[in-house]
Length: 519
Image (cartoon, rainbow, N blue to C red; front, side, top):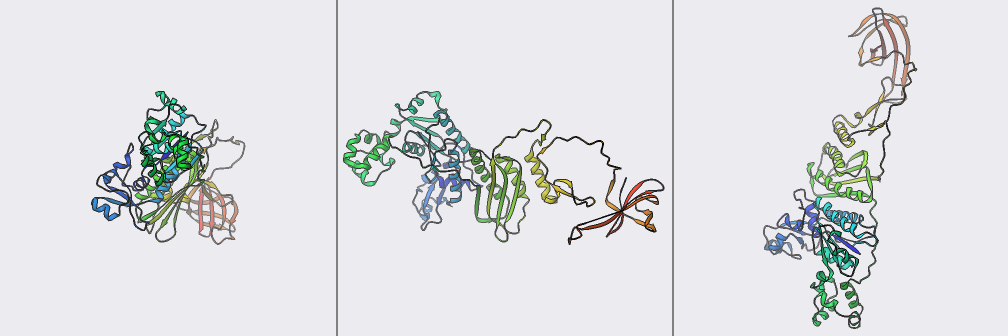
């Protein structure tokens, strides 16, 4: 049993998918509905000709193979777009990835088509999954066609004859045919047809053969598949040789095919080079959404989740800009990823337009983790991280997080560390430990004047307090990082009690005396 997934009009869909002003509507023949008059040409060809066109342009006389002047002569309102090989490759990778949800035996045939060997799978579940693939890609604005049959050739012909749906072709003598006899065995969205009705009046040239063989069959009066299938196989082999036998096996569904299995790509990245440099964020956000739609589908098929995202913006002049985002929790949700990266992207300021864009995701295996009984997590870690990203864009990356005391002994020395996504339970408190009197610091310290008698302070004055010293403890010398050019400190501290009440800490450094706090 074989299944063929195909992106009809690949070049046309790729152009529409890469254009933020055009959206391919879902449903049957959706590609032909937007816009009305559009043709795609290959700008890299020596003589650009029309590759694909919408049905509206086709009704105006535009056909494949016409040059651009010929096409515009037939349809003056025709919109001509260049082929986008980047988007075509992205669509092919996406189609190849979703095919793996049917079976691991997948072959890339190129030109927007993949072949899946369904041997060993449950037919009913495979057909249901085919309908889900059509619906999922349709929601992303991608029209696909799916054909299922015993022969890979018949499955390919079935995919070419239907757009935006699943066509199942089976014979009465096969297991697939018996499945089709029961209406409830297949989803209602599937189209079902017997093999004899599907292949009966089909021209023999559609199955594929050489012109000399088709010429001989034409002279015999054999022009349809049904007429050729009625011939005896031995007689065909005696008169037409091995080529005739291969054609007979192909049209009757007896062809044996070994699927050349291909592996899923290990890298999860998407890139785009703009034809014209962009100087606004809207096209970047549009492409970012397209990238994430494709990569998240691939991750879900491969049972992977993204733990880190890197966005590279190549500018026309100067060094590229790199936007990195570590995710609070690994995920394959395109909405959460887009909200985080979009918030970071909107904060980027460039001095020159953006010429290219690349998104890389570092993925890990999907693992579910259960929190402890007294452990809690953020209600929405992605929205929390998005808020932190916006705050960081205003105050700076090094000023967002939670403060942690430095271990070098510097007074009031703290550093910022990343906020965790989960809050561990609080440990037991050592209530018997003596911490001393709490110090309420003034930030910043109050500039003060201090008088000494010998080496002991006897009087202090600042904007909040003044008076004679009743008792004193100290001095305590603090210094560190004096061997570095920047970041070193050297100060002396005293604890003093005034005669009219109050205990204060005074300090002297290279800036002079100040009152640091009150006990």
